[in-house]
Amino acid sequence: MADAPRFNPSRTPGFPAGGVPFKWLALAAATLLLLSGLARGVYTVGPESVGVIQRFGRFAGTVGPGLRFKLPFGIDTVTILPVKRQLKMEFGFGSAGASNPDQAASDPEQNRESDMVTGDLNAAHVEWVVQYEISDPELYLFNHREPGPTLRDLAESVMREVVGDRTVDEVLTVGRQGIENDAIAKLTKLVQDLGMGLRVQQVQLKNVHPPQAVQRSFDEVNRAQQEREQMINQANGEYNKVVPRASGEADKKLREAEGYALKRVNEAQGDVARFKSLLEQYEKAPDVTRQRLYLETISEVLPQIGGKVILDADAKQFLPLMNLQQLDATKP
Image (cartoon, rainbow, N blue to C red; front, top):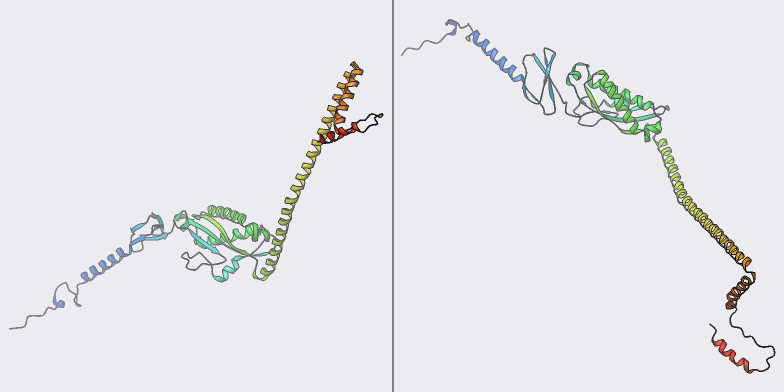
């Protein structure tokens, strides 16, 4: 049996000398390129984010969460922003595992941004946190080249201004709430005026203390102030305990004196009225009034004398005295 002729692509019309047709190669390359572009055009937007679409570099709109498609080959670019997530920036320190690239500065920068000068030219180490969210994705991406570092610079500038308006005692002790309120008000106004597309939610002081070089001296001064306040409170407590008691006793004495004075006045007025009444009766019948007064006086005085035995001066016998025993038995 004779051998069958072998296929030689070079001798077949439409085939190049290499063996595979050019149009097949072009079709395969175009198919691979198309599939690659389609694969790269599919993306996912998370539930707390939005996708900002740029078509040839120009803002084209936003898309919500879900599986999305963009035009491939560099026609569309998508930037995913976490608009429903609360973001934060830390100043003077940095937490581990931060997902926000602008959350904390480098270690040397942290020491620099936390060292501040108060209004009375004292030094203080201030650590604080700014919490914010992206309110307008278009303004956030296109109004400023670097919105994150810009916000950090604004927050640091505002905090230095607010701390510089207060004394070191206010910064370290009683003025923390006022510093936070003033800082968030000033920072919010700056962000709105610059159109950064951000909303500042909270400014919170974390750790505020003097520099390490004077920490020990400050602790001693603070301890002395606390002892002073404690002694003042104890003195006020004793004062509040003793003075009200003395005031109460004084009021009691005054009321007793006023009551006694009122009693004496009323008794005197009663005696005067009684005397005037007797005087009127005496003027009408002097003998009768005098006799009545005498009898009333005798009736009041004689019961106070007790039992008395009156003997006749001329009595010479002992027998009349025998009844004295009965008189003694009748004494109360």
